[in-house]
Length: 419
Image 1: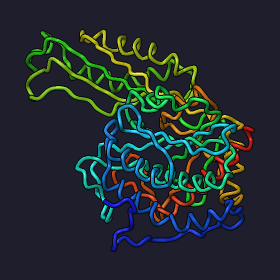
Image 2: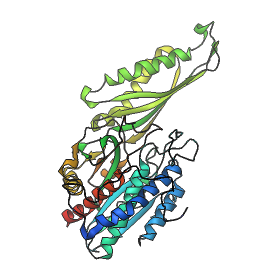
Image 3: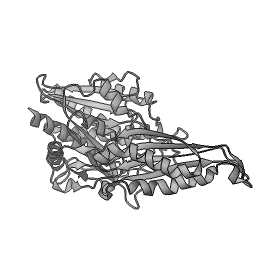
Image 4: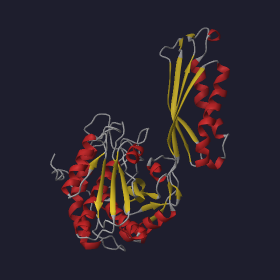
């Protein structure tokens, strides 16, 4: 693969986006023209990333590609200690503030069934959450801001964070923070693909925009035995059935209804033979909750309910409760910056209200240290949209230059507001 990342001969763009959307303001120094020239290459980058996805924690080739492209733009990227993520400062006025922009770069363990030229070439791995789009957008932002910096028209530093391991625990954002990714940062911003919004709209919300998300695994054990004599053993399948049907409902009754707590088991396993009561069973899932206070109490509540439900069965309980991430809580001033930036980039019709989602996002950990905000980028395609984390998920690629415009405007306005 060359660094130019040109579109393949059979990979014509399905559509295009005007250089300056109606009602918007042009980017400074004719950057809209530069973006129009760069857009096909950014879309080609997205397609290459989609074809060559890497799982959380193993994003080494993705990070190397990012570093090469940033270097070609005249920037000086540095790899994270593990080599699977990148931090790069676009250096403007040395006495100015530091604003960070973040993209996540990992893929999901799913097969890719799509009939497209950029279908995943890696068995069992797929960009089904739009991280390839986030990465391409931030590369485009870096290229444009580097031009402004070279002209002496960047009022501070913009830190580009290409983060690994957003989809797993422990979260990759914590690796970035430990590596100094938030040093001197006054605000941080990110976009996330939203197939429920059309291209040209950005969903904004003050306060919580995602839920907290934790992982729960319950392992049950007992002596096992013959299905003809369950009274001589512990009926592990019965115990597992009680766990997965009773515990979620009972946990939700221990917290306020408006906390939005949701415990859902996505995996359950017990036994291998129709006439053998197994000696082990397990179930794992996620606990999601909108309310921060309830999130703090959730581990204790789940542990008590699980033990209460399983106790009459006689099974032994081993509970693993893995803390994931708190809700992303958007700072009001950061949303003001994003609102002004979106209006400038896309016109007033580009701003959309968005509800709090039950999805989790480890961008929340950055906001434990500095104020900032996460926005939802419209990537909806014509026809029925496919939700995130489904293997057939795809985007309208016009969203890439749209996202670049929004993030460039965001960086410029955040620097100006922080002076």
